[in-house]
Length: 313
Image (tube, rainbow, N blue to C red; front, side, top):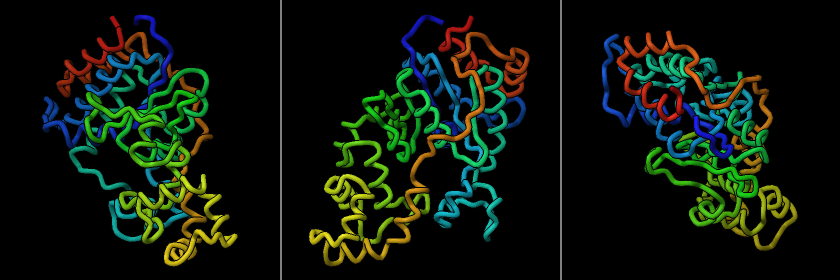
């Protein structure tokens, strides 16, 4: 592979393969199994590598999509996505059957290529991403590829951490999220300020109610005015006369939520990462497995594109 400046590329894997599943027309491989999510993800990886030329690459994984520590803090966290009714915390996430059968093929494809796939028990991919981004601070620039705004909290210009946001334009035409993007779009200056704003605003897609009557603009104004959520809460407790009427009442009524929600919103930055080589592979790790997958599922062209992007002979 040609020599390039060091760069770590962190993939929010589920975000990308869900996007591929819903965005790529269904294709049935020779095995009779659909492969649109597999093809789409491999093509995304090829496009990202061709553009960014990372020297290090991690497919970050949800070993636990609904960790106990987050559910304990906010029981409604992702509760609407549980596949089975009731209070069974072991129930899985709702995933279309045609996607579920492709996830093991994705795992095998990454293993065959030698692309590091890293998950941590009891944690989401966001936590794996947050831990890598923190651990590698100062070593090289970090690009986080995701369609999830939650990871905007990791943006840090000083440490060259940005988000390659795929929600609108995909990997071919993403938004490159830095602090100026966050300031212009959301009215807060930093990634950490975005996290504080997100606590106040809430996120219905994750089952976080937010503070009743506090929308995104008001949340941003409060965080900008007081600097942090902690400072805002100190101002509430201290009787700041600028906080009055219905707004004060809403914030006071949400005290229990505001105690718990930061533990849910904040990405873990010290998850116990395994000792894995995350350098971009220079050779195919398992040619026999790759050949088997290519033949059984009709993935030859997708594998060829990734190999070409990686610079592997």
